[in-house]
Image (cartoon, rainbow, N blue to C red; front, side):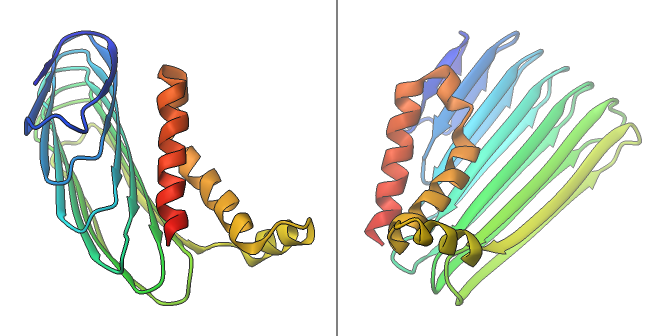
Length: 227
């Protein structure tokens, strides 16, 4: 699939494994494809890529920034259902000057659920003014869980700003208590707190297609509510 116009694209049902984003574009993309994608960014392209993973397959997404001045932002939500394992791999390869890759991942982990996450930013030799950031947040709902994550920065250039970070926390008992003290039922209070975190991942979609954003948040909260 070739993207050659500024727009918002829902590619969830697109079967192409390769997505090419041509030069001088500003695009937003939503995806929940369950297998492998390869995304290519051309010169002077700005891409926001949103992905929701909630199926127990091996999910792989690879980004290639081979043209100068490409800017990539990835927002990625994991949620495992039915006590099954999710394995995901996110790879971003930068071979161009003045390019950026910014990846943020939120994993919501329920009791006895298992997430295996491998994420990499690779910056090749000789390129200049490169920025690469990885941030992972893990939000646990119960006491029993398993997660494996491998954040990797492969930096082969000197002119680079790069970092990675990981945050692990449980739903705050204090916040739950506060909401319950305002006559909010515990399950509803939990969903309100989760919804705030989910919206933080997808909030930029509200500016490009508010109806899609609203329906997406509703779909995700319904999936979690079923558990």
